[in-house]
Image 1 (cartoon, rainbow, N blue to C red):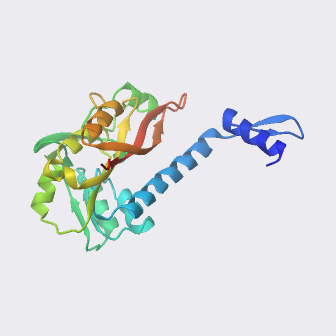
Image 2: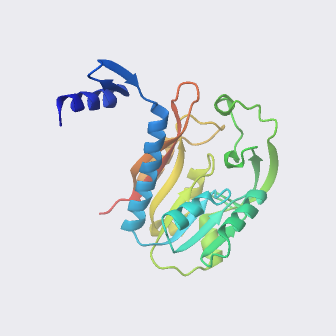
Image 3: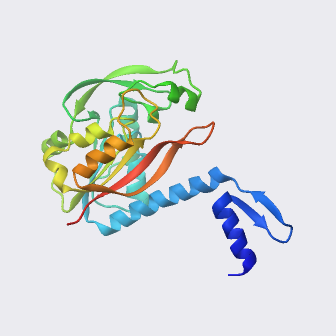
Length: 260
């Protein structure tokens, strides 16, 4: 590598700027464009590695919204095993079923998921992907510049992963991959794995660094719980940043069960 190439690389790496040695000029780089592209690539690379390294016979998609994750693993990654998608919002649930079509290895369940069985209140946002069992706080309002006037409440049935799998009686070969994105309820989802905890080899979950909902568990609580269950972080990427200063608010974290 030539000296000017090394110089340019160091400037870009250390200062997020490109250095034109001929003009002796520092040129700013669009940080967010580059880092978002990198985050997307790392997330897809993590999924591709895990799905090629493990023999997953079942994917649990908790907090499925309208089927975005179903599309990613079925159509982008080419995964051919069972997918069980759980979504509490009835309107999103109907779109989810349409998007999955007549897939013979797909099951959709119109319930919330947590650590116990019961009835809960779902706060449905104008952007339904942000709907949560928890009330939005000031961080949410600052990030999305929203007064939440269009938020509505619906009642949803709550179940557990263990209850779902026992009731379905599915026959699959291989391990389970758990993806949970429930806008603050992910730790409770994992507490509801019950007797199926030992069959899960990898987990993808959303974690709060700066919570945008009241009373949610942050990333340290989730990490501690998973470590105690013998899961350790494989990779992570930011998924939500503060619009004012770009500080990280939420991350997407991958965990694998520790071998030995």
